[in-house]
Length: 335
Length: 77
Image (cartoon, rainbow over all chains, first blue to last red; front, side, top):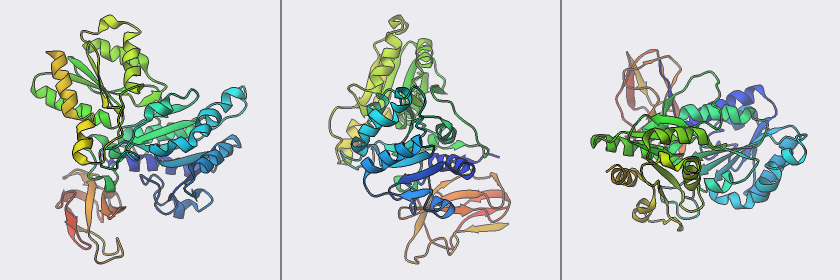
């Protein structure tokens, strides 16, 4: 019998399973002990594992991410709940120079096994400092793996993979996909049947979320679900859209992207991160650098424009890469 | 037939109401006693609703509708 889970609950199940068996794993972050972290990934862990393994931190990301990297080098596996990616700035030296580089610079002698969980994205009127995606900003750092599940099955499998990885993994979750109650009713396509036993989802492989032959819609995190909605809409006009979920930004499955786009000859990348210098451009480059002749039309990016994200709902909705925009662009391209 | 009610002690305050966030099984699914079947939101806290018996789940209350403690939200046949 099927058992549906939200992404939040699926990730929690994986973390709980690993923590039960591996004493080196501990969780730290703001409000993790009582509240279980921003998505409830550590919900109930304070009572279950105690204050030595579920550590409430002060609001000082600079301090606790440095502490985590040090603990990882000393043989622990910290799992950090860094609520919102908007505040990644104060962590940047550790990300850029310590957690991501020490394995290489020590000639492989020192490992930094740590999992950094971060919430991304907007769409719920939380203004310019609590709505950013910024995933390109972390995917740009050599030496770090960046994964971005968009449904419960991948959330669990990728959490197991992250916790078993010998080095630094950033595990992103778009707030709107997590399925936590305070964000409203979960999006149906984020829920999946999740096996009770542990399993891993490997990093660096796209998922073909929907088969189609006329055009390829490529998303990551929340925009996967906007692409799926757009594909439903396009089907009413007789346009068959294939939907790709990137799932992993570093490593990026360039072979998988190329093969998928080659099949349809048309590509739209929908990305809630800012338009310029982003994942969207990188995905397009993965195709055109290899063979631009597979494209029958110029590729299109549907992204958040390079402006501070507005607070007002009407204005924020107008700039987000929502399904209607993706579908409009697809109709124009297929015509 | 077993009634599935929101437990009276699921949250402490009598003046607060909640709502179902998500049913984790579809209407008509077979559930096992003790399985987590729904999440209930009270303010910003997500609480858990477990199946009181094994059988076929019949859902009475959809997500995002205000519910009270003690309220009948489903039956298991």
